[in-house]
Image (tube, rainbow, N blue to C red; front, side):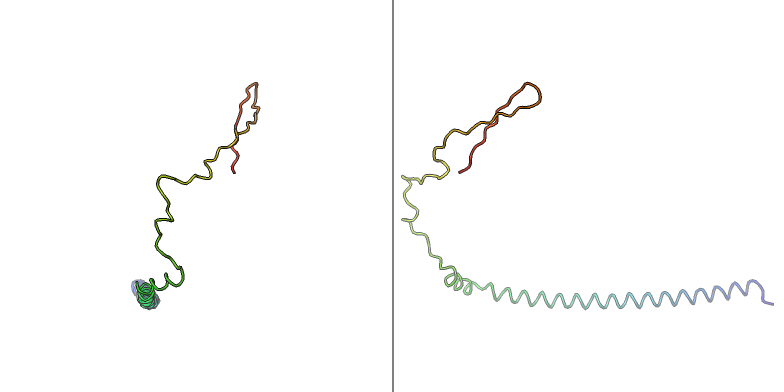
Length: 121
């Protein structure tokens, strides 16, 4: 018959073997995750380099100038377009308006307040 200490040692060896197997499986799983993350980082860096090259090509000053002349057809503002400082233009919303109508609002009790509403053009 086996002694109790031998049984305990056999159980400890079996338990440590199982723990080693679990640790090995976990390390393998984490290693696969790390490899996938490194591949994703490399792909993202490659895509960033490609986008930076495309941005540099699209952002060339000569190309932008040609596009602005072709598409926008912009020209410098002439001084006669601005007008004279002696005759400032009139604002549309500065035109005289009629007095705003008032509407009484009754509140609780005997107090009456008047609220004016300004009509927008």
